[in-house]
Image 1 (cartoon, one colour):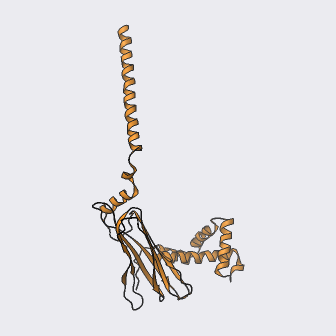
Image 2 (image 1 turned 180 degrees about the vertical axis):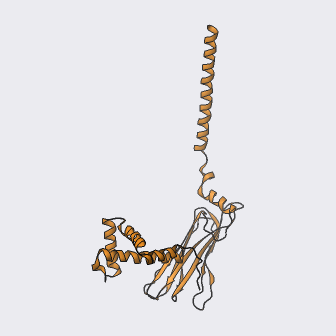
Image 3 (image 1 turned 90 degrees about the vertical axis):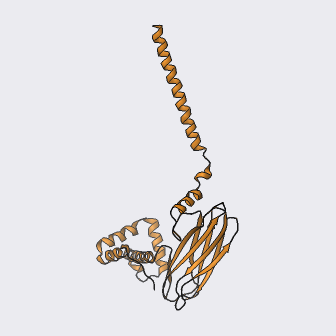
Length: 257
């Protein structure tokens, strides 16, 4: 009897010790993950690794930097056009260069303009405005390029780029950072939106864009999603609308003279 009790107590003791050992190991493992130096898993380090594994110059890559390019709308139709380009880094950089690829404009050939260059050994935060001048009617693709080298040993040069697509017309300029096709999609959506607004309120048949914008805000505030659902119904009921949407969603190469 004593032998059985001793054996039982021995098994219980061994089991308890095992539980403590496994529990403490698990606690140490969890503690190790929680206290892991944040620098080893920071965004810039991970992004730099990705950049080295997939070297694609001037591609849309996730790097520790930001780049923004946009149109400064002219004060009047046909007036001079300017483009704003801002570049920044989330890490200290030993050098950097910001350029703008300008397409052919009229008889002027395409070119690459240097907007900024430096060796700051610091974070980069630069914003430059480039005066293009009046643009004849047509489509233009500008590309801002930001090249920089992180300030650390054996660092490789990193590159980030951003596009600006302009559709210049006699009365306005449409701009997008996505594509010319995106400009067409937005324009078609606005056209269908105005068609729906006028069907809801026939008194807006001759209204200007400001009045339509105010009525759109009113509809969205009182009945969110109504305009979108009615545009969807238009697509289903109007073959011409369905065709135009299908053409814009089809894949084709965009060409610019």
